[in-house]
Image (cartoon, rainbow, N blue to C red; front, side, top):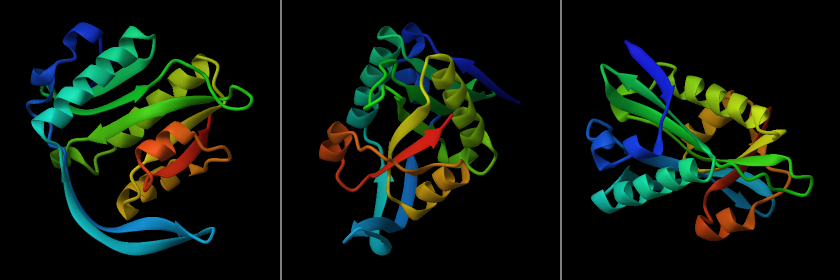
Length: 176
């Protein structure tokens, strides 16, 4: 049975992710060329390393410590999905809050967990003064299909920090 709840800083550690499978086989990605979005072949396999998990733990702990939101899905007590939203508003009209992560374990995809996590992130952001979620998301066709289904569109205003960090990511926004 699935359970969803907010995580505390103290419970975010490497062991939390022992049953979480971050694996994605990517074949095609969206790329912007001359102001036009195109699907391009860009095959690779995305598997997180131990170092990636250690960085993730530190980032999620920091999100909680700075007043942000980390929300998770558990199946039989095992972490199977999570999302995070930063607490600091940004953008020209201070309208965005940053959805910094949303991931579902490979063995649990297609069961509505991502949708529930996204709804919770939107609700939290709205309650904390945002008008839109900002998402710097992987450009894989499957990933972008999820965000489109959730009502996201290309961001009106790009966050340069995200563009510099991940130049192939798609910069999205979702109205709350």
